[in-house]
Length: 262
Image (cartoon, helix red, strand yellow):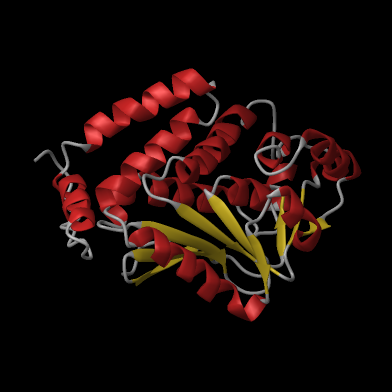
């Protein structure tokens, strides 16, 4: 399925959409590309209907080397609020995507690239992948809170204050990435993970994504109560009944992947 974007490309692999950041040479993100990211993920059901999972990756040697530096030179006190809102909305649209998003990261994931990766549900990294927040070195702020989704605070501060990138191989032990694999296997590994997700019903995946995003910063009791309410909502979906029936009958479920109450 093609999409009318200049700096993003998509193709469908079964129930998974592969979305590729494609702005050479290093996929640095400019204002137009932020708008495209916000549009694609923010209008997800229009752009990629029926999709159960996304693999988000980068074209060429790098996932995303950061924000387009030239645009920092035109940043002023007057235009900064609008631009920063656009950037936030782009990151949030990935985080809020109604289905799981798997980041397949190779090469540089710096600044904006790190924030994009951290907005995904899970990250698989190639051996070349390195993550960093160079903001201090170029006189801007941002990225620390996204980095804190991936790593413990002492390491976040070490990376942020030094502004030096760290290889994925050193971060996997902290859970920042799920696995580190050879670069030439990265997309296949990410798609394999997506396939394990997309075997489940679209309704269950969408409810699960909403639940995970909602409970992430809630305490235990409130978070579990919310999940219980989601169970009640999901029970109204035909495919929830099919999942139980298939389990009882010891067979593979035949999901309709249609959303709506029974």
